[in-house]
Length: 135
Image (cartoon, rainbow, N blue to C red; front, side, top):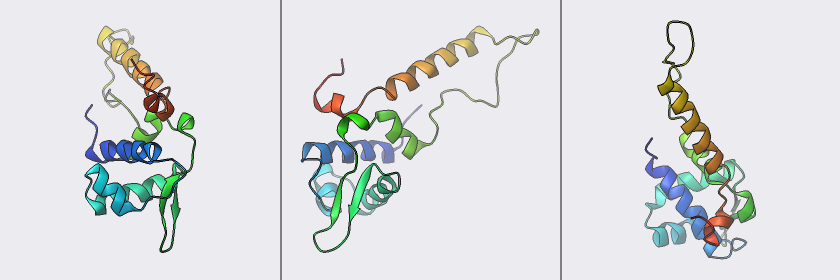
C-alpha cells in the first residue's frame, strides 16, 4: 500500500496548523509556501479537510484555515481515510479459500496485518506526534 501525495500533503497541513498554534487562522498561501505544496493542490486538500470538519474555513480578507478539533482527537487513520478512501491491504474480490471453504494461511495473515494497521492508525493522534510519543 502506497499513500498518495494528497495524503502526505494533508498530514503535513494538519501538522503545520498544529505547530503554528492550532487556533490561529492561517491562509492557504502561507501553508502552501511553508510546506512546499502547490497552492492549488493545498486549497483542494484544505477544502476536503474542511468538508470533513477536521479544519475550519474562515472567509474574508483575514480568512484562512484553523483546526476544528483538538490534536488528541485527530487520528492518522481518519486523515488517510479522507484522502485515500477505505484502508485495505487485501483485494476483497479474491479471498483465498481452500477446498473445504476455510481461509488459507496467507489470507488469514493478511487479515491480521490489516487489522493491526487499522488499529494503530486509528490510535495515533496528532497530539502523539507533536509530543513525540511514537516509538
